[in-house]
Length: 208
Image: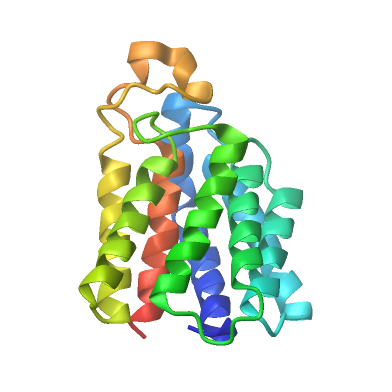
């Protein structure tokens, strides 16, 4: 996975988030400010012209640029959280020319650490980490099992989706949804849903 692969991933995220914008906003309307889809769509849409103007030639620089753009353009909590995740991933990957699945796992762990440093969320809090952590675990298991890259990424995407769906019966313990108490139960967390979309986009690019 080289810089061009990661650029394609970002382009697919931009497309997917735009398509799913209204669904993400509906999910957020149930437990939050009803702006998650609109905010993410605006943020990733802002990434497109930045990369078109001058696309970095290393994976690290590309992901850091994505993170910086998201932080500048996405409101609420999701901008800083996703922005931090991409920036931390970029720092870890640096100028690595061909990223292995194992190296992607390390980068994602760094992204997760950045998110948890900002939000202090853990599994079961009904946040995006409930999709991110299972996806990372699935990738790490795939590395241990020695499966092919495409199969590993497909497993991560499936785990992220399952993790997002698993937030439906959870009681929110972080963020605005936590203010709802028991009324937060029965709704999919919008952050977990958007994380699942990001891994679905990665899987789409990996299968091309």
